[in-house]
Length: 458
Image (cartoon, rainbow, N blue to C red; front, side, top):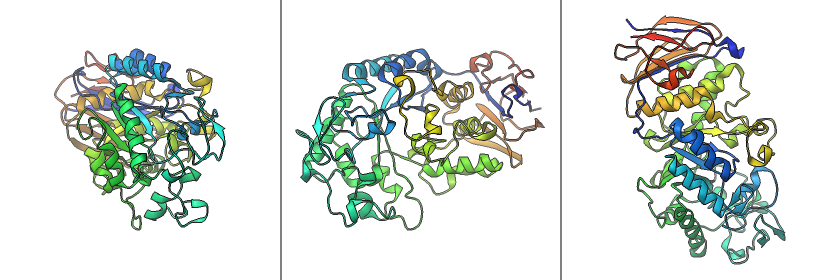
Protein backbone atom coordinates (compact mmCIF):
# COMPACT_ATOMS: atom_id res chain seq x y z
CA UNK A 1 0.00 0.00 0.00
CA UNK A 2 1.29 3.48 -0.87
CA UNK A 3 -0.11 6.43 1.01
CA UNK A 4 0.69 9.98 2.00
CA UNK A 5 -1.12 12.43 4.28
CA UNK A 6 -0.46 16.11 3.60
CA UNK A 7 -1.73 18.45 6.34
CA UNK A 8 -1.76 22.22 5.96
CA UNK A 9 1.11 24.32 7.32
CA UNK A 10 -1.05 26.70 9.27
CA UNK A 11 1.93 27.90 11.29
CA UNK A 12 2.73 30.23 8.40
CA UNK A 13 -0.91 31.32 8.23
CA UNK A 14 -0.91 30.23 4.61
CA UNK A 15 -1.62 26.96 2.88
CA UNK A 16 1.68 25.38 1.87
CA UNK A 17 1.06 21.70 1.35
CA UNK A 18 4.02 19.76 0.05
CA UNK A 19 5.56 16.38 0.67
CA UNK A 20 8.82 15.22 -0.86
CA UNK A 21 10.25 11.88 0.11
CA UNK A 22 13.90 11.05 -0.47
CA UNK A 23 16.22 8.18 0.41
CA UNK A 24 19.64 8.69 1.98
CA UNK A 25 21.55 11.52 0.36
CA UNK A 26 24.80 10.39 -1.26
CA UNK A 27 27.40 13.08 -0.60
CA UNK A 28 29.32 11.98 -3.69
CA UNK A 29 26.45 12.61 -6.10
CA UNK A 30 26.96 15.40 -8.63
CA UNK A 31 25.61 18.73 -7.38
CA UNK A 32 23.97 20.76 -10.10
CA UNK A 33 21.81 23.46 -8.46
CA UNK A 34 23.04 27.01 -9.04
CA UNK A 35 22.43 29.86 -6.58
CA UNK A 36 22.40 33.38 -8.00
CA UNK A 37 23.90 35.29 -5.06
CA UNK A 38 22.54 38.56 -6.34
CA UNK A 39 24.39 41.62 -4.98
CA UNK A 40 26.24 39.70 -2.25
CA UNK A 41 29.79 40.90 -1.66
CA UNK A 42 32.77 38.60 -2.14
CA UNK A 43 33.59 38.18 1.57
CA UNK A 44 30.01 37.26 2.46
CA UNK A 45 29.77 34.72 -0.36
CA UNK A 46 32.99 33.03 0.74
CA UNK A 47 31.71 32.75 4.30
CA UNK A 48 28.31 31.51 3.13
CA UNK A 49 29.91 28.83 0.93
CA UNK A 50 31.70 27.42 3.96
CA UNK A 51 28.86 27.81 6.44
CA UNK A 52 25.82 26.77 4.43
CA UNK A 53 26.03 26.51 0.64
CA UNK A 54 28.56 23.68 0.49
CA UNK A 55 27.05 21.57 3.30
CA UNK A 56 23.54 22.07 1.85
CA UNK A 57 24.54 20.41 -1.42
CA UNK A 58 24.47 23.32 -3.85
CA UNK A 59 26.80 22.94 -6.80
CA UNK A 60 27.46 26.49 -8.00
CA UNK A 61 27.24 30.11 -6.94
CA UNK A 62 26.69 32.85 -9.48
CA UNK A 63 28.22 36.17 -8.49
CA UNK A 64 27.84 39.68 -9.81
CA UNK A 65 29.99 41.04 -12.65
CA UNK A 66 33.56 41.25 -11.29
CA UNK A 67 34.66 44.38 -13.12
CA UNK A 68 35.09 48.07 -12.38
CA UNK A 69 31.82 49.84 -13.11
CA UNK A 70 30.17 53.24 -13.07
CA UNK A 71 29.68 54.95 -9.71
CA UNK A 72 26.41 54.47 -7.85
CA UNK A 73 24.70 52.28 -5.27
CA UNK A 74 21.99 50.98 -7.62
CA UNK A 75 22.21 47.30 -8.56
CA UNK A 76 22.36 48.05 -12.27
CA UNK A 77 25.62 50.00 -11.97
CA UNK A 78 27.30 46.57 -11.87
CA UNK A 79 26.10 46.04 -15.44
CA UNK A 80 27.92 49.09 -16.81
CA UNK A 81 31.62 48.18 -16.74
CA UNK A 82 34.29 50.76 -17.50
CA UNK A 83 37.34 48.48 -17.23
CA UNK A 84 38.09 44.86 -16.42
CA UNK A 85 39.83 45.62 -13.14
CA UNK A 86 38.32 43.67 -10.26
CA UNK A 87 37.66 46.65 -8.01
CA UNK A 88 34.03 47.45 -7.32
CA UNK A 89 31.47 47.80 -4.56
CA UNK A 90 31.43 44.05 -3.89
CA UNK A 91 35.16 43.84 -3.21
CA UNK A 92 38.61 43.88 -4.77
CA UNK A 93 40.70 41.32 -6.62
CA UNK A 94 42.18 39.73 -3.49
CA UNK A 95 38.74 39.39 -1.92
CA UNK A 96 37.39 37.84 -5.11
CA UNK A 97 40.21 35.30 -5.18
CA UNK A 98 39.68 34.39 -1.51
CA UNK A 99 35.97 33.94 -2.17
CA UNK A 100 36.66 31.49 -5.00
CA UNK A 101 39.13 29.57 -2.84
CA UNK A 102 36.69 29.32 0.09
CA UNK A 103 33.88 28.15 -2.16
CA UNK A 104 36.11 25.53 -3.78
CA UNK A 105 37.17 24.22 -0.37
CA UNK A 106 33.45 23.88 0.45
CA UNK A 107 32.89 21.92 -2.76
CA UNK A 108 31.12 24.76 -4.56
CA UNK A 109 32.01 25.98 -8.04
CA UNK A 110 31.94 29.67 -8.94
CA UNK A 111 30.27 31.23 -11.98
CA UNK A 112 30.58 34.93 -12.75
CA UNK A 113 26.88 35.65 -12.95
CA UNK A 114 27.10 38.28 -15.65
CA UNK A 115 30.09 38.33 -17.94
CA UNK A 116 29.57 41.50 -19.92
CA UNK A 117 30.75 40.90 -23.49
CA UNK A 118 28.03 42.90 -25.25
CA UNK A 119 28.49 46.40 -23.94
CA UNK A 120 30.20 48.93 -21.71
CA UNK A 121 28.53 51.92 -20.00
CA UNK A 122 25.83 54.37 -21.07
CA UNK A 123 27.30 57.43 -19.33
CA UNK A 124 28.34 60.21 -21.70
CA UNK A 125 31.06 61.37 -19.30
CA UNK A 126 33.69 62.29 -18.64
CA UNK A 127 33.35 60.25 -15.47
CA UNK A 128 35.31 58.08 -13.05
CA UNK A 129 34.71 54.41 -12.26
CA UNK A 130 34.85 52.50 -8.98
CA UNK A 131 38.60 51.85 -9.37
CA UNK A 132 39.42 55.41 -10.45
CA UNK A 133 39.49 54.85 -14.21
CA UNK A 134 38.38 57.85 -16.27
CA UNK A 135 36.11 57.32 -19.27
CA UNK A 136 33.38 58.61 -21.51
CA UNK A 137 30.77 56.61 -23.40
CA UNK A 138 32.96 55.69 -26.39
CA UNK A 139 36.42 56.23 -24.89
CA UNK A 140 38.02 53.98 -22.27
CA UNK A 141 41.75 54.81 -22.26
CA UNK A 142 43.92 51.74 -22.69
CA UNK A 143 40.89 49.57 -23.39
CA UNK A 144 38.45 50.78 -26.08
CA UNK A 145 38.04 53.77 -28.36
CA UNK A 146 35.29 55.03 -30.69
CA UNK A 147 36.09 52.56 -33.48
CA UNK A 148 35.52 49.57 -31.18
CA UNK A 149 31.76 50.19 -30.96
CA UNK A 150 28.77 49.87 -33.25
CA UNK A 151 27.44 53.17 -34.61
CA UNK A 152 24.71 54.24 -37.05
CA UNK A 153 22.63 51.07 -36.81
CA UNK A 154 19.74 52.68 -38.68
CA UNK A 155 17.55 53.90 -35.82
CA UNK A 156 17.32 57.26 -34.01
CA UNK A 157 20.02 57.46 -31.31
CA UNK A 158 21.04 53.87 -32.13
CA UNK A 159 18.19 52.60 -29.94
CA UNK A 160 16.62 49.16 -30.34
CA UNK A 161 13.06 49.84 -31.48
CA UNK A 162 12.14 46.39 -32.79
CA UNK A 163 13.18 43.52 -30.54
CA UNK A 164 12.38 40.93 -33.21
CA UNK A 165 14.83 42.42 -35.74
CA UNK A 166 18.29 40.83 -35.91
CA UNK A 167 20.15 43.93 -37.06
CA UNK A 168 18.70 46.12 -34.32
CA UNK A 169 19.22 43.50 -31.62
CA UNK A 170 22.85 42.96 -32.52
CA UNK A 171 24.03 46.31 -33.89
CA UNK A 172 22.02 48.90 -31.93
CA UNK A 173 22.39 49.90 -28.29
CA UNK A 174 20.52 48.07 -25.54
CA UNK A 175 19.15 50.71 -23.15
CA UNK A 176 21.69 53.22 -24.43
CA UNK A 177 24.70 51.09 -23.47
CA UNK A 178 27.73 51.49 -25.74
CA UNK A 179 27.57 48.38 -27.94
CA UNK A 180 30.88 46.58 -28.49
CA UNK A 181 31.76 45.45 -32.01
CA UNK A 182 32.46 41.82 -31.20
CA UNK A 183 33.63 41.23 -34.77
CA UNK A 184 36.64 43.44 -34.05
CA UNK A 185 39.94 41.69 -33.30
CA UNK A 186 40.73 44.34 -30.69
CA UNK A 187 37.46 43.80 -28.85
CA UNK A 188 37.77 40.02 -29.00
CA UNK A 189 41.32 40.15 -27.66
CA UNK A 190 40.24 42.31 -24.70
CA UNK A 191 37.31 40.03 -23.85
CA UNK A 192 39.40 36.87 -24.12
CA UNK A 193 42.06 38.43 -21.89
CA UNK A 194 39.40 39.26 -19.30
CA UNK A 195 37.89 35.76 -19.39
CA UNK A 196 41.32 34.14 -19.11
CA UNK A 197 42.12 36.34 -16.12
CA UNK A 198 38.96 35.20 -14.37
CA UNK A 199 39.79 31.58 -15.16
CA UNK A 200 43.25 32.10 -13.64
CA UNK A 201 41.50 33.12 -10.41
CA UNK A 202 39.60 29.83 -10.36
CA UNK A 203 36.29 30.80 -11.96
CA UNK A 204 34.44 27.69 -13.17
CA UNK A 205 31.95 29.26 -15.56
CA UNK A 206 30.36 32.29 -17.14
CA UNK A 207 26.84 33.58 -17.55
CA UNK A 208 26.95 35.66 -20.71
CA UNK A 209 24.73 38.68 -20.13
CA UNK A 210 22.71 39.93 -23.12
CA UNK A 211 24.01 37.05 -25.25
CA UNK A 212 21.15 37.49 -27.71
CA UNK A 213 22.63 40.86 -28.64
CA UNK A 214 25.87 39.21 -29.79
CA UNK A 215 25.85 37.08 -32.97
CA UNK A 216 26.26 33.46 -31.89
CA UNK A 217 29.26 32.88 -34.14
CA UNK A 218 31.03 35.98 -32.80
CA UNK A 219 30.40 34.84 -29.25
CA UNK A 220 31.74 31.41 -30.14
CA UNK A 221 34.90 32.99 -31.58
CA UNK A 222 35.54 34.63 -28.20
CA UNK A 223 34.65 31.67 -26.00
CA UNK A 224 36.66 29.22 -28.11
CA UNK A 225 39.85 30.92 -26.89
CA UNK A 226 38.92 30.54 -23.22
CA UNK A 227 40.57 27.56 -21.47
CA UNK A 228 38.13 24.71 -20.94
CA UNK A 229 35.55 25.78 -23.55
CA UNK A 230 33.26 22.85 -24.40
CA UNK A 231 34.72 20.75 -21.60
CA UNK A 232 33.20 19.74 -18.24
CA UNK A 233 35.61 22.11 -16.47
CA UNK A 234 33.85 25.24 -17.78
CA UNK A 235 30.11 25.85 -17.48
CA UNK A 236 28.62 28.39 -19.89
CA UNK A 237 25.07 29.72 -19.73
CA UNK A 238 23.72 32.46 -21.98
CA UNK A 239 21.00 35.04 -21.46
CA UNK A 240 18.88 34.72 -24.59
CA UNK A 241 15.51 36.29 -23.90
CA UNK A 242 12.78 34.74 -26.03
CA UNK A 243 13.92 33.49 -29.40
CA UNK A 244 11.18 30.86 -29.51
CA UNK A 245 8.22 32.72 -30.99
CA UNK A 246 7.27 33.15 -34.68
CA UNK A 247 8.72 36.31 -36.19
CA UNK A 248 11.77 36.47 -33.93
CA UNK A 249 14.78 36.60 -36.24
CA UNK A 250 17.34 35.66 -33.57
CA UNK A 251 16.56 32.13 -32.39
CA UNK A 252 17.56 30.70 -29.02
CA UNK A 253 18.76 27.51 -30.71
CA UNK A 254 21.53 29.45 -32.48
CA UNK A 255 23.43 29.56 -29.18
CA UNK A 256 23.33 25.88 -28.27
CA UNK A 257 26.85 25.31 -29.58
CA UNK A 258 28.22 27.70 -26.97
CA UNK A 259 26.60 26.23 -23.85
CA UNK A 260 23.35 26.35 -21.91
CA UNK A 261 20.63 28.85 -22.79
CA UNK A 262 18.18 30.59 -20.45
CA UNK A 263 14.54 29.54 -20.87
CA UNK A 264 12.46 32.55 -19.85
CA UNK A 265 9.29 30.81 -21.08
CA UNK A 266 9.77 28.38 -18.20
CA UNK A 267 9.39 31.09 -15.53
CA UNK A 268 6.30 32.39 -17.31
CA UNK A 269 4.70 28.94 -17.31
CA UNK A 270 5.47 28.35 -13.64
CA UNK A 271 3.88 31.67 -12.69
CA UNK A 272 0.79 31.08 -14.82
CA UNK A 273 0.22 27.55 -13.50
CA UNK A 274 0.59 28.30 -9.81
CA UNK A 275 -1.38 31.55 -9.82
CA UNK A 276 -4.22 30.07 -11.89
CA UNK A 277 -4.49 27.01 -9.66
CA UNK A 278 -3.92 24.67 -12.59
CA UNK A 279 -0.54 23.15 -11.79
CA UNK A 280 -1.67 19.95 -13.52
CA UNK A 281 -0.98 21.87 -16.75
CA UNK A 282 2.74 21.54 -16.02
CA UNK A 283 2.71 17.91 -17.11
CA UNK A 284 4.95 17.55 -20.15
CA UNK A 285 6.72 20.84 -19.47
CA UNK A 286 9.86 19.42 -21.04
CA UNK A 287 8.16 18.75 -24.39
CA UNK A 288 6.97 22.22 -25.41
CA UNK A 289 9.50 22.92 -28.10
CA UNK A 290 11.87 24.91 -25.92
CA UNK A 291 15.60 24.31 -25.50
CA UNK A 292 16.48 20.61 -25.00
CA UNK A 293 16.75 19.74 -21.32
CA UNK A 294 20.48 19.04 -21.46
CA UNK A 295 21.12 22.63 -22.63
CA UNK A 296 18.40 24.49 -20.73
CA UNK A 297 19.08 26.80 -17.79
CA UNK A 298 15.76 27.35 -16.01
CA UNK A 299 14.57 29.34 -13.01
CA UNK A 300 11.41 30.31 -11.19
CA UNK A 301 12.70 33.90 -11.06
CA UNK A 302 15.87 35.87 -11.76
CA UNK A 303 16.88 39.43 -10.92
CA UNK A 304 15.36 40.89 -14.09
CA UNK A 305 11.93 39.28 -14.23
CA UNK A 306 11.54 39.74 -10.47
CA UNK A 307 11.65 43.49 -11.10
CA UNK A 308 9.43 43.31 -14.18
CA UNK A 309 6.76 41.26 -12.37
CA UNK A 310 7.08 38.57 -15.03
CA UNK A 311 7.52 35.71 -12.58
CA UNK A 312 6.57 34.51 -9.14
CA UNK A 313 8.35 36.36 -6.35
CA UNK A 314 8.58 36.27 -2.57
CA UNK A 315 5.40 38.37 -2.33
CA UNK A 316 3.33 36.02 -4.50
CA UNK A 317 0.19 34.78 -2.70
CA UNK A 318 -0.38 31.51 -0.87
CA UNK A 319 3.25 30.41 -0.86
CA UNK A 320 3.17 29.80 -4.60
CA UNK A 321 6.77 31.08 -4.77
CA UNK A 322 8.01 28.26 -2.54
CA UNK A 323 5.77 25.71 -4.24
CA UNK A 324 7.12 26.77 -7.62
CA UNK A 325 10.64 26.02 -6.43
CA UNK A 326 9.59 22.66 -5.00
CA UNK A 327 8.16 21.70 -8.39
CA UNK A 328 11.15 23.01 -10.36
CA UNK A 329 13.70 21.24 -8.18
CA UNK A 330 11.74 17.99 -8.49
CA UNK A 331 10.93 18.15 -12.20
CA UNK A 332 13.61 16.76 -14.56
CA UNK A 333 14.02 19.63 -17.00
CA UNK A 334 17.14 21.74 -17.40
CA UNK A 335 19.79 22.98 -15.00
CA UNK A 336 18.09 25.09 -12.36
CA UNK A 337 19.18 28.41 -10.87
CA UNK A 338 17.77 29.72 -7.58
CA UNK A 339 17.75 33.46 -6.93
CA UNK A 340 18.93 34.62 -3.50
CA UNK A 341 17.96 38.29 -3.28
CA UNK A 342 16.59 41.05 -1.06
CA UNK A 343 13.28 42.76 -0.32
CA UNK A 344 13.79 46.06 -2.12
CA UNK A 345 14.35 44.22 -5.38
CA UNK A 346 10.66 43.40 -5.32
CA UNK A 347 9.37 46.67 -3.84
CA UNK A 348 11.54 49.05 -5.85
CA UNK A 349 13.43 48.45 -9.09
CA UNK A 350 16.61 50.43 -8.45
CA UNK A 351 18.07 50.04 -4.94
CA UNK A 352 21.28 48.12 -4.54
CA UNK A 353 22.01 45.64 -1.77
CA UNK A 354 20.91 46.39 1.78
CA UNK A 355 23.48 46.82 4.52
CA UNK A 356 26.23 47.53 1.99
CA UNK A 357 26.00 44.05 0.54
CA UNK A 358 26.35 42.24 3.85
CA UNK A 359 23.43 40.31 5.26
CA UNK A 360 21.06 40.05 7.19
CA UNK A 361 19.16 43.37 6.83
CA UNK A 362 16.31 42.91 4.31
CA UNK A 363 18.04 39.95 2.69
CA UNK A 364 15.66 37.14 1.76
CA UNK A 365 18.30 34.39 1.58
CA UNK A 366 15.99 32.07 -0.35
CA UNK A 367 18.75 29.49 -0.68
CA UNK A 368 18.49 28.97 3.09
CA UNK A 369 14.74 28.40 3.10
CA UNK A 370 14.06 24.93 4.43
CA UNK A 371 11.96 23.83 1.47
CA UNK A 372 14.41 25.06 -1.17
CA UNK A 373 17.49 23.67 0.57
CA UNK A 374 15.70 20.38 1.18
CA UNK A 375 14.64 20.07 -2.44
CA UNK A 376 18.22 20.75 -3.51
CA UNK A 377 19.22 17.60 -1.65
CA UNK A 378 16.27 15.85 -3.29
CA UNK A 379 17.41 16.90 -6.77
CA UNK A 380 20.92 15.65 -6.10
CA UNK A 381 19.57 12.30 -4.92
CA UNK A 382 17.23 11.70 -7.88
CA UNK A 383 19.60 12.88 -10.59
CA UNK A 384 19.43 10.79 -13.79
CA UNK A 385 16.08 9.23 -12.84
CA UNK A 386 12.93 9.52 -14.92
CA UNK A 387 9.66 11.21 -14.04
CA UNK A 388 7.08 8.49 -13.44
CA UNK A 389 3.70 7.95 -11.77
CA UNK A 390 2.28 11.38 -12.57
CA UNK A 391 -1.01 11.87 -10.68
CA UNK A 392 -3.29 14.91 -10.72
CA UNK A 393 -6.73 14.17 -9.26
CA UNK A 394 -7.58 17.84 -9.75
CA UNK A 395 -5.90 20.88 -11.26
CA UNK A 396 -4.35 22.22 -8.07
CA UNK A 397 -2.88 18.92 -6.84
CA UNK A 398 -0.14 16.87 -8.44
CA UNK A 399 2.21 14.09 -7.43
CA UNK A 400 4.95 12.18 -9.21
CA UNK A 401 7.99 10.05 -8.55
CA UNK A 402 11.54 10.22 -9.83
CA UNK A 403 12.11 6.59 -10.65
CA UNK A 404 12.26 4.69 -7.37
CA UNK A 405 14.53 7.29 -5.76
CA UNK A 406 12.13 10.02 -4.69
CA UNK A 407 8.52 11.16 -4.63
CA UNK A 408 6.91 14.60 -4.49
CA UNK A 409 3.33 15.73 -3.93
CA UNK A 410 2.23 19.35 -4.23
CA UNK A 411 -1.07 20.72 -2.97
CA UNK A 412 -1.70 24.22 -4.35
CA UNK A 413 -5.04 24.59 -2.57
CA UNK A 414 -6.10 25.78 0.88
CA UNK A 415 -7.54 22.41 1.90
CA UNK A 416 -5.67 19.37 3.26
CA UNK A 417 -5.14 16.58 0.78
CA UNK A 418 -5.65 13.03 2.07
CA UNK A 419 -5.18 10.46 -0.64
CA UNK A 420 -3.73 7.13 -1.64
CA UNK A 421 -0.97 7.76 -4.16
CA UNK A 422 1.39 5.58 -6.13
CA UNK A 423 4.86 6.60 -4.95
CA UNK A 424 7.03 4.20 -6.94
CA UNK A 425 9.31 3.89 -3.89
CA UNK A 426 10.63 0.72 -2.26
CA UNK A 427 8.94 -0.30 0.98
CA UNK A 428 10.15 1.68 3.96
CA UNK A 429 9.83 4.92 5.90
CA UNK A 430 10.84 8.19 4.31
CA UNK A 431 11.70 11.69 5.46
CA UNK A 432 10.02 14.86 4.31
CA UNK A 433 12.94 16.91 3.02
CA UNK A 434 10.69 19.92 2.38
CA UNK A 435 9.89 20.42 6.06
CA UNK A 436 13.44 19.53 7.02
CA UNK A 437 12.73 16.33 8.90
CA UNK A 438 15.96 14.59 10.00
CA UNK A 439 17.95 17.04 7.86
CA UNK A 440 16.54 15.34 4.80
CA UNK A 441 17.96 11.93 5.66
CA UNK A 442 15.99 8.68 5.72
CA UNK A 443 16.85 7.59 9.24
CA UNK A 444 13.33 7.60 10.59
CA UNK A 445 9.75 8.68 10.22
CA UNK A 446 9.22 12.36 9.48
CA UNK A 447 7.14 14.38 11.89
CA UNK A 448 3.61 15.27 10.79
CA UNK A 449 0.73 17.06 12.42
CA UNK A 450 1.98 20.08 14.34
CA UNK A 451 3.57 22.50 11.93
CA UNK A 452 2.92 20.23 8.97
CA UNK A 453 5.18 17.90 7.07
CA UNK A 454 4.12 14.54 5.72
CA UNK A 455 3.60 11.08 7.01
CA UNK A 456 4.40 8.41 4.49
CA UNK A 457 4.70 4.65 4.17
CA UNK A 458 5.19 2.42 1.17
